Image (cartoon, rainbow, N blue to C red):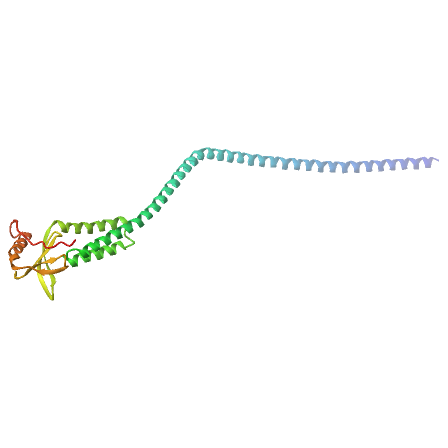
Length: 258
């Protein structure tokens, strides 16, 4: 009987020891889990803190950039307005220049027609005028026509050259001049002293002084005059070349073509 009690006590002891071992293992497992939970919490807290610091840095940078951009905007806004005003002014000036260019081209075409019309009148006048300085005058007209057809020349330059030619032609009517020319008298070709009195008359005299004449405007030909005009024509030529003082003489003007 005593043996049984002892055995029972032993079983109880063993059971207590088993309980003790089982309880210690459970406590140890719980401690490990708790440690893991704490470590995880600390890690999460550190990551959170790190992200918060990173975000704070980014936020500070963004705030600084925003303030800089705002300051730049406030600084550039007046300049933008001024630039827009200048641009509007430039665009208005360009529009004005384009209108002027269009008008200039229109005037250029109109001026070109006018210049050609005036040139045609001048050419016709020279062709029907007294036949003096033929090479010089026809050469001037040919050069002027070439200038008027030159695209590189401006309208103003063409007008200037046309006015120069008109001025030269006009000047022929205000002076007296003696030149040496070759004329066709019938079937003869004579080298003569030719006296031009303005644009009114042309008188000629052979170099030996034996023959004299004039240009008949009505008949468009050279004619010979009687000897009784030789002295007066000779005197007129001497006065024109300033070989003698001016005096009043009588010259046969002849018929004027209407």
